[in-house]
Image (cartoon, rainbow, N blue to C red; front, side, top):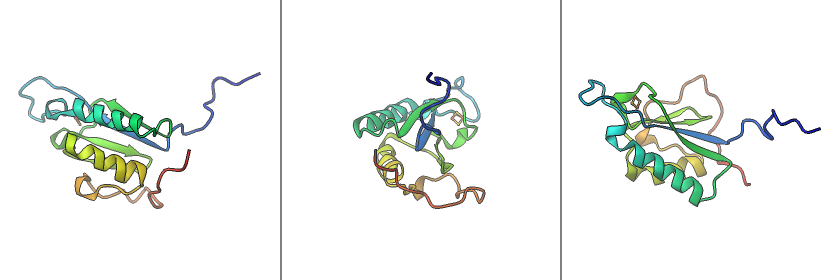
Length: 128
Ligand code: FES
């Protein structure tokens, strides 16, 4: 009998990217990621993950508010817990190639240093 409740591998992705696409009413003091091009950023991440055949090792998906609205478009990559700020469409290819594929975070776009609680080097993704 096959156990259908347990994924074949866990965690299911080597890297998991969350792109905030939250939208607030016009005039919100904190701003939002939607008004800064989040949908285009999300779509480019998905396009590259598909086009470079990074599935199922890497997943890019939209998220709700990550509570760093002033610094949006906000993006976070797990398992490294690397947060990116003010990500534009022009930045996505570099993040995908440098970080998601080669394991080298894009320092100029990082929101803050890597937390001390996260140990070990950032690694390139494995071969399929
Ligand atoms: S609206 Fe994107 S982090 Fe809050």
